[in-house]
Length: 253
Length: 253
Image: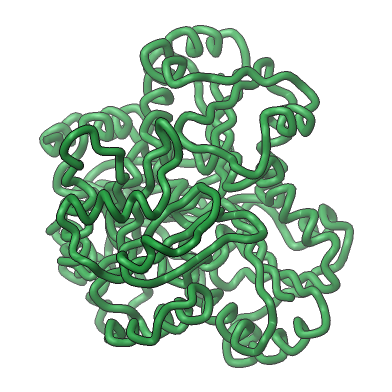
């Protein structure tokens, strides 16, 4: 049995009671910090909470060498701790598929994900989010994908959640703005979020050019590009929770 | 202080360690089952876990009479337990906005939400979900909104998550299909999900007409209308996790 356990957003206390219980009784417990990270804790603190040693998985353990993990799960209960909610990263669904195809049962214990947490942090309405995309570090020409996704979402009046690349190091909002602008994204209103799930998240709404110079502090960072219109309640929330400028009012339909 | 605590998807053990800790030390603990429900538990079991009495809030406490709750939060630490992740329901962001505008500090402790859990359950890629909508019970003519949202998402090749109405009682997938069809939605491929977060979720992919007669068992139910194309990994996952028919392969691009 292979059990994926979501650890939520920030520190070791964001795991659910059910997730903790399962991790304690598994034969083997692994953790991966490749698809995301928990900035408010450390491996040592998670091990202390569980009262046992945890094996750290690298990218290769999840991808090209995944067979070894699945082989182990044929005879043992293997739990994999994952930041956020498992399977929001496609790496996990590929691993789960391979396990099921090889006859290993899988189970998911869900955790909080940034993909829903952005609604609480910003006041933006969940039902108005369109497709999401990742802003990657450019090696040569920046990828057109995030800008294309923003344009597609604008065409149906939807917000865009943009994940920022984590490798080789977590991308900052200021870097993401530079990359998006150089990939052709016009200046527009967006929301930057730092340290979601912590006691002191920073949430700031402004134009891209102004967000570039805003002091968000340490990561992880994430961004939302706003739809072409806002519900008036979304506007009010962005004013109250994200210090949005009054000019944002012109988006209210 | 008003603290919103997400309870996750299914039962009392889906709350995070942080959420449990905060609920135990709050001056007043309330719960609301208006915006969603936890089908795998009861008020009594949640009270037992917390070791204290919990006040149940009605819709009116959250909406037209919200002033009373906010008044109380001026002098006490009030915690509100909420199924799923707080603020995915717009009711919560309105309450949070009113509190902040009246000078009451607010805090969110995130929980697992069906909006990310669907990715794990189905293998569908998170970044390919477009806007979501709710299928409501029709009083007269059915609302055109869900069908319009599906069409908008199809225009940008995105999946659509459809929440099903909870009032007066949780809608079933069979009822939702009838309503969507009578509102003009053509037959297409979709995924029905029952009891997300439980040990025995049912996940089934097929055409709407076939899903109507599938036995999903007890609620809550939720649906995804598939985009016009699928990534081949999404197809493979739907075959493995959702017993999708082989004809689905024609959507793979």
